[in-house]
Image (cartoon, rainbow, N blue to C red; front, side, top):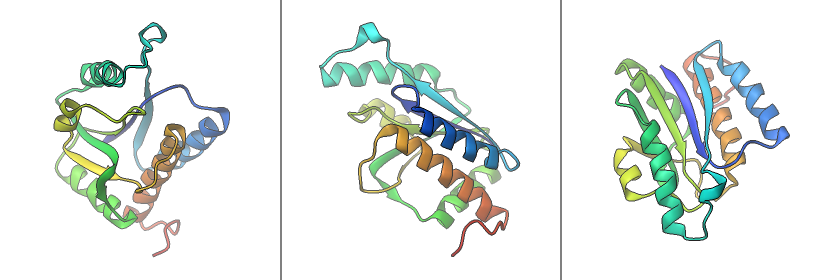
Length: 157
């Protein structure tokens, strides 16, 4: 199963890029993973929240393919422990999911249409974090899940 982290927003700061490279390197022996940054065109920038969400919806839905298993990250989503993340990954692999997409929506969330496309909605925390930080935390949790599945000593229960 290939994993794609989709994030609406801007490119990473150097320290985030370094952290992502660190975790992606650790994940590579277990699984393929990549980061996809969905940027709205600069000329499309607006202060209208609904218009912004619709622009982001277009970017997301244009990229979404039938073989994608979309998991939306939202602070109101289902809270899972790290072992539960690992179980979810294992279930998806067992079900033959080709590509799991972990979506970090825009600053104002996502539209109902995007929510309807999601197969699951998970939460990393009830706290709100900057999108770039979420990318890094998400990469760490993916690594942790595969460490659990492969009995690596990284995760201590």
